Length: 271
Image 1 (cartoon, rainbow, N blue to C red):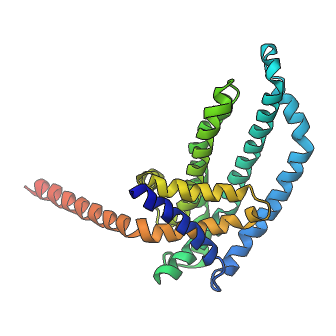
Image 2 (image 1 turned 60 degrees about the vertical axis):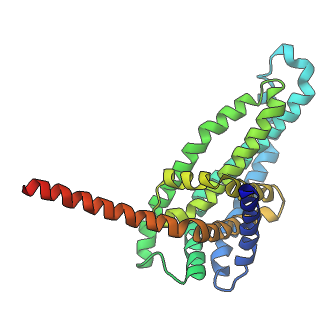
Image 3 (image 1 turned 180 degrees about the horizontal axis):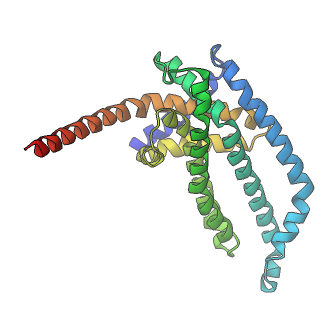
């Protein structure tokens, strides 16, 4: 019953993202990520069209002779793997390029929903924060890349690669979409990456439903141009309603406990 509720909430936040990007105060923060997506997708599409034949030949050369009777199936699998490869290149590059804009969009959405400003300071303070944002993108890449390489290689195992691995890959992709876009509001509050993962895992059905809908939209032409700001807006709404107050309370309790421990230590030293 709890999982059904979380599935409905995942759909709700995804739809809420579409509603939020149309709000007057947010439109200008949505335009830049969309323009970046258009440029990036155009470049990757051109690369895919010009290199697809050579890449298929390269992949097929690794197929042993005794599997030649599966050549048709393996050809389809090779094309699918190459498409997934380009998909993750797009996700990773768009994450790095658009990270500052997505972080700013998440900050504006949270301010709209709560009435509270997160980042105090000048534009220069925001610029100085960009290296930290890019480091966070690198952290996400290092988390996902080894797992994707293993799944890619397992995809060439007969039967296993055509049955179980695609399901696991799809689920992991949905999980990574949740991590990718929920991370922006978490990172705005400087919540550590491992804490963010644990929080999302605690509401796994919610995270996978939201991430799965984002993943599906990235494969739809034209829709994939706007899905990133939609995902950022929806993920920020999810953060506000499910994680913001709980993590703030946890942070306050940790600070109090730390202060108590320091006071006790100081008392012991005095004695």
